[in-house]
Length: 196
Image (cartoon, rainbow, N blue to C red; front, side, top):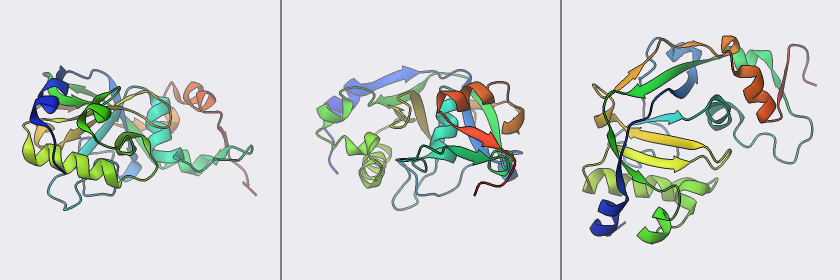
């Protein structure tokens, strides 16, 4: 994928996320800035880098990690408590501004990249874009809107995490003060009994 360097430079902004949230499986709670190779939206297709995702609010963090598309076309929108109990959340802030490529509005259009890169269920275009940005430009990540909630998210490249991001100790998602309002915003209820 070829990117116009002038457009990339114009889309590069200094951005310092504060009090963003990262949802993670409970087994990774001890290392809230830990990363691995995955198949996420802006993951490296050739596993040459890792990405850490943070969301502006709890509803978005939950939507992006736990809920995804599971309730499409369904009026019965229930999560079993065990699904919440398996997750933790940490507050993440940058200690200094990151240089991110802003694709929240017209960025993808200006680059001549399919809007699928940030807004489709299929994530192949996003991975190609991310690889091209990581390989060709001195950027720290991508600033985008969640396709699920429309809220702001940042995908931070591993090279910008150490020494640039700090995380509060992760806590159990079930104990987060904003859990109930976040689930209400997503029109999801939690039950403890049988889901059938």
